Length: 348
Image 1 (tube, rainbow, N blue to C red):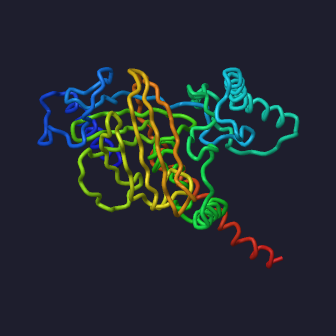
Image 2 (image 1 turned 180 degrees about the vertical axis):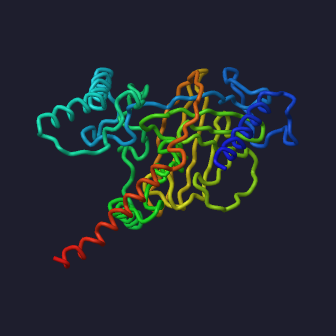
Image 3 (image 1 turned 90 degrees about the horizontal axis):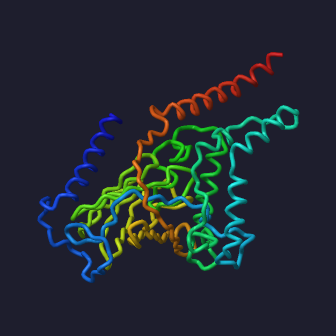
């Protein structure tokens, strides 16, 4: 069934792509509602006149989502500071270096801990090596302090409950994160956010739809460009509708499932994404998150994207969910051992 669903999704995505490339593939809504009126001579356009955002876009960067506390009050770095920051981050994030250090400590008997925090060596990570072109100290541009706003009391309570579930023995798959369960990628969105690897998104356009196909977890959002009403059915990636505002594609998404890939958010989250073609090799991506049940105010981030050749390969996560089977089997084994322990003690 999983392969069938993937095949159907792939066929639909390719179909949209082929229709987008065919001037003859016109629909009943040939005059696209909301299509840009004011046209710039330098803006790349599709055969039907919409701004052309198509291609595979790389959104890697080492600029953090939030401004680091040590850079409080400093919105941008100098050229020299940016170079030093890039050097320091490359060194601190070098997994091979940490593996070597851990191995030496274990060999010397000074580190006997075992965990999977360093299970990936540096080959598997792809965080990027450069700060964004403006040398901002955070991807967040609003609030001005470059930090995610404080949690509301309700948001704090929800975060504490989620943390408690992660700390205890898993009673079921719902106790693990959606990323760990391979339901959603931790950078695929919405909104799209830089992460550890698989930081590519392919955009495919049609007169009536736009497809955002993320490499992470092989997820495709097929978004209508008309004004059809929302179904109001909660979904993992919410319900999205898109429109053109000048040369900018605006995507609004609501009706999220309780658990999403954005930390701490609720079903009340409302995401607005804006994509603008800056030049043939650059795309400006901006998103605003508004969730009054989670954060005390909306917040906005800007993530520049760069054209890349691709292709995007399938990201299958853990096929067959063997990882989850192992987690839950281990949890049941621990419970069985704990249940047997008092009986053993009382028999002495």
